[in-house]
Image (cartoon, rainbow, N blue to C red; front, top):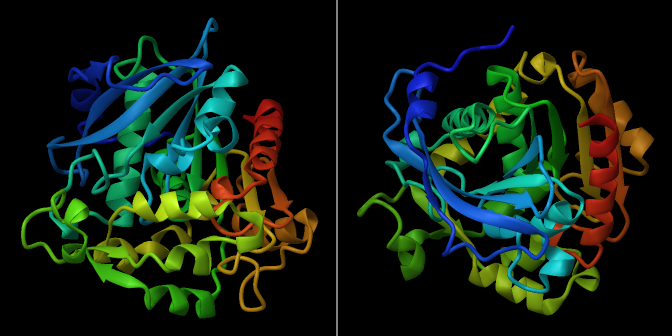
Length: 344
């Protein structure tokens, strides 16, 4: 049964702000920036905005859109990296394949609204994404309605995608990168040591509500320590990644387990693809998952998704956690698109 989002009719009926000139065009697509009205709770009005860039393939009519959901301390930049885009941009690769993308900044990040940090939780992220999906399906975000919506999430963004698909039936397929049911406790403990107050980064401090210390970020040294398999990454990419880091909230960290709560993944009823790197310290570890082969990872994950028509996996050689930012990113994109063509 499809769950109807409270106030969704009002949300999708509002005018979505469109601008075409500020959005850098992807070579294979025409792109427009927009802001979609969203609420952070089902009993609230749509007082906030999710910023995103909708890219439509040049010369083709796309009926399916990939909604791209980035992880913690990232923004839409993760999916459309501003360096050698032909190599590191999922948006550009998908456009060349004739697909549409909606590349967003999650609530509390980048160009999207920054509510009080206590409002920015895993649940409110999932609700915001579901409202974006509703607008895309209704045609109020874009020139026409999309018949199918794929949620493509990375790391924390994948957890948000799972929750949105489970609670709000906001996807026709899930592509989950850099995540799995189990996370390495030892790697997570290491990551916790790299927290940084937003007040120490003026660029980020200017974005968040004044005096709200619930917004935090991550120290630059986390990028190579946990996000990368250094031998397989370009040092220039790592440097630009740190320079474009973003915020997260303490409330997000406190609710990160919501997508793993009993009954959540069990309610997912669409095809699911997991994509992980074999050098991902958060996912492939002795205290986490068996990623020695795609079949091993599927054996671990399948029991959590009994309602999914299929669960598949891709394990990438010589790739760390930030899959899009390794030299083998094009291989990841090809494997994801092959699966989407068959199952999306």
